[in-house]
Length: 137
Image 1 (cartoon, rainbow, N blue to C red):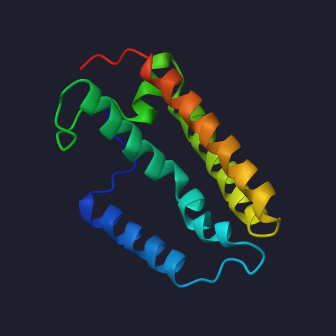
Image 2: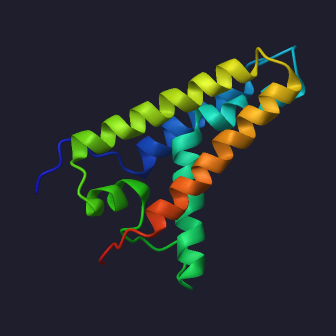
């Protein structure tokens, strides 16, 4: 199959650097201290996928530094989702995480904390669901 888009290490490292620089150079909130975690939510999809892959590979006693087909998008594809559907899922999840980050900088500490606990519990649930998908290598 021919892929329409390919981004190598150089492109992804540059984009990661730019996003990290933007995240560090911004003031997030004066309402509560938990707003400082907003960049983690904004960059939640790639961070989440990296953590999941390291977790899955550690459980299987594989090196987390070797390539394999156990990323979230590939697991969704193995489950039967089409590539456009996977892109839509990732965009919706990213929008929800970004909206959560925005809201968490504007509400009280306790509500913000509860919001983060809810999002983290949903991410853990999704991680277990994704782990159950068999990916053939």
